[in-house]
Length: 184
Image 1: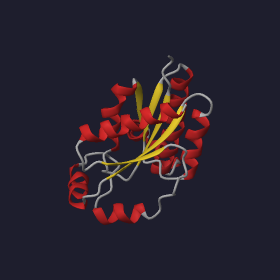
Image 2 (image 1 turned 90 degrees about the vertical axis):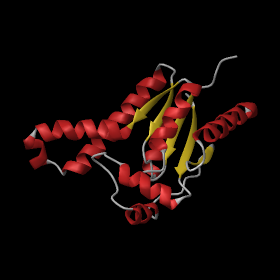
Image 3 (image 1 turned 60 degrees about the vertical axis):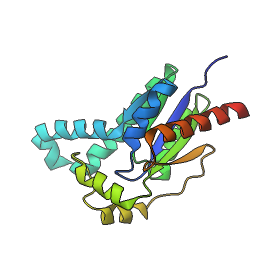
Image 4 (image 1 turned 135 degrees about the vertical axis):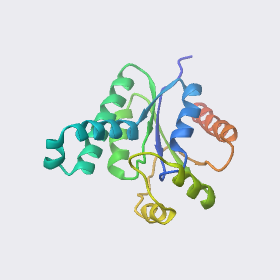
């Protein structure tokens, strides 16, 4: 029996454990993880070396747009060679979801995995430990950002509370994937 291929679109606020969970499920699904933050940070490093770029562009917006375009291309190339992919990005709006939906169409099953952290103390601690060049500085800022989140009506969608053990969350996710397979 041919194993299905998946496009897992991670979504959630900063500090909710998307990257950690992406890496935890990647091996079980034989999936490639595409980390938008890594791509964006590399673009920012390149732009920092080119002072002319800083003067011409709105630095953060441009780096973010280029990172998403690059991520979509890397995702597309991996899907073309029949890999399952995990897109590790905040993925908060409908445009990003629709782009992912187009990439997955007729090639792999798109699953939206929304990570959240039900314990605000744990979320706050995670945010304090971040050393990324892009980060939210406070829990208040994250909660304000969460109000801007679009609701998605994805065919396959699962929510993962990353305050629970990684082992139980991986088991929950893989059970969900197996249940999708039973439907088809």
